[in-house]
Amino acid sequence: MWITGGDQGLSENIVHFVLAKLPGAPPGVKGISLFLVPKVMMNELRVGVGMGAAASGVAGYTAALRYARDRAQGRPLTSKDPAAPMVPIVQHADVKRMLLAARAYSEGGVALSLYGAELIDKMAVCEDAAAKQELHLVLELLIPMIKSWPSEWGLEANRLAIQVHGGAGYTTDFIVEQLYRDARVNSIYEGTTGIQSLDLLGRKVPMAGGAALAALAARVAADAEAAAAHAELRPAAAAARGAALETFGKTTEKLVGVAAAGDVDTFLANSNEYLTAAGHLVVAWMWLKQGTIASAALEAGAGDDDAFYHGKLHTMSWFFAHELPKVHAASKLLASLDTQNVDMKDEWFY
Image 1 (tube, rainbow, N blue to C red):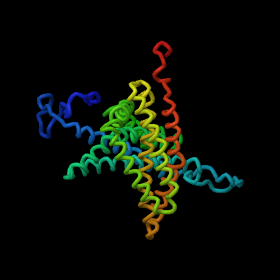
Image 2 (cartoon, rainbow, N blue to C red):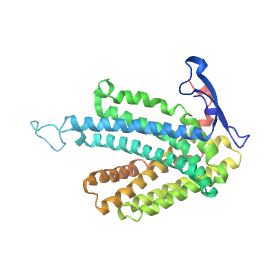
Image 3 (tube, one colour):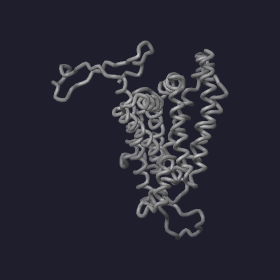
Image 4 (cartoon, one colour):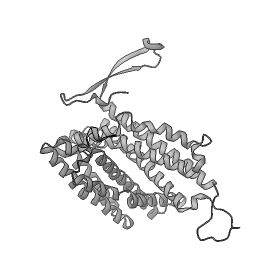
């Protein structure tokens, strides 16, 4: 449980000692054994945390959607007849906003976590040394985002699920309040969000001379090019390229230059902001990949799945309109080299 500080820079190989029980072990402390665990296992655990957090968000979204379709309250804003029947709250724009956000956060988190799991599986069977190294670099860079982004934004999906339920959402009659409480711990264990941000910017971004970031950028660019083959996705593909390869890439270069000059405090002053922006960027990438599949399916004739694919495309569009612009705002702050977090003095807190 308390393994966050287990890494070090003195040796090439890192292992952890872990106390655990084997199946069928004697009860009590006599059944405890000491295991030597390789650091790749920590990556798998962090992917698992991200997946659990995202899945909790999906559960909250699903419960909220069901409630919104069943709960009749209010009338359309254009209706002036007090005798007109009330409508399910899913028809109200602000409820749709919350449901769209909850879906975008949770399903985006699921896609990101599954992508990380796929990288782990591919590494296990890859026999080409260069390809395996590329997989390793991309995975190492993504791990802090896979662990922390769903932990923070899956929780936000659960918060929105409570909000959709109104006052009923904070009662034990509905599952959403328990989902929120259970999901709250995800951003804390296996490395808090702050620790993950330091790991991403302080260790993973400079790793191998920036090769990991270059490998990730190449993957984003390739998927953006594939998306641009579909006319309706060309604006999103261009937005992904602009956020990833231009705005965020240039900001990262500037920060790395600050670190190279020895100003580590300024380099890491806003690492949490960097992590959040990076997470938004890769989740936008995941949505673009889903949008490409949805567009191809609709072009081929989706049949009974038509609504499903249209829903995927619309949720992708919502994320690009409402969330991806935050990457540009965060990049502006990061590029300003703001040091207010560092400059705050202990005695000024009251």
